[in-house]
Image (cartoon, rainbow, N blue to C red):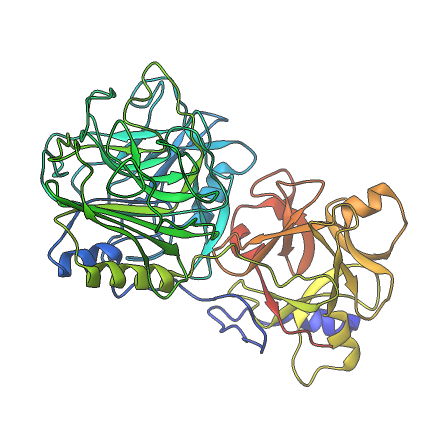
Length: 515
């Protein structure tokens, strides 16, 4: 790009509201998050089994829900912040969490009940419901839902959540009830007990049938288990049931998918069913459908809600289980198989994914700006010096400009789990930061250069595309500011650290390479 072109670029009016050019090979969603036509709780209501409680850190479970999903606590100053959705019925506003938690640690202190019935889950520890546990770290696992960044409730031993509202409408006694949750087959253990569902109000083991909760993990309560798990089981108090008795159910299947749908339904007197499958599976696997275990019928449910632990926890003892919670609901009544199938289809359509990046070593990519001013601009190096800028590239651009805006992905020079970007036009020269400005320079072969030239792709800070986190300054990301490339934090001493437009300015589309 010539100096004259650069000057013309600076003088070009900003095209507010410009539409992004979606090149062939674009691998991420763009645009404003749209409201869902239906959420799982809309489906349950249509089936005559309305949600009594609905929880999620990733999305709204009603098409009309536009309230907070969860609350985070910032360690720096003790401030609390509610994290809502991008739009009614939509995905979590992860960018709000990223902005609030920038440069410090955050924990998830509450997961709000989307039904409006007041069954909000609160961590079981000092400052929460009281007890011996702590709140889970808010940033341990980022993921993608419908192409948008979200965060999981990532529970380790010592984390757990509880809710009880006497007027909350959660089924009690022998009333029929259904439950589901989306969890993970890759973060489990055999500790007691990663549960979500109906529990005792006094945090004590109050006898057979006092609980009715989904359990997910590798714990083999009665022995004789087949396979390695994790399994979808029923915690009915004083036992985890793989089927209708203490004997191992041969129809059980280990659920090892990265994202798993787990379901339990129980009519309270005679019958229960267990189902499970990966979230992208076309149908659920019927793991069990039959009589309740002898001695656990009828049920004696108390109407509290537990998440992440067993019922006799965690006032004086601590949770021993590990698991991941993305979303879940408890419903009144015994859902039909058709309703179960429709909920699974809704979960599949939500598009849970790890956000697998298009940044495979050896691939070529062009990084397209997502800020409304600059959606036709791409990150590129200037032929006049070694600075890195953003500027337009079109099909009519010169071969040189197209090459300058194309990068070859390499395994990270400092960490192979991250990436480095080599110029397609200047072999052996890499994108690196120096004094927090971006440059294209030949590899110096030093540890410092390798660190400065290594970036870790993350789901976009704005909820769109990808953000490139610095390897050696993890609070800073690749940003364009004044059409120049920088390494920027969300707030700081440099002008380019301005929090204004930080999220979109640090979010890039992985577009098809121009060269």
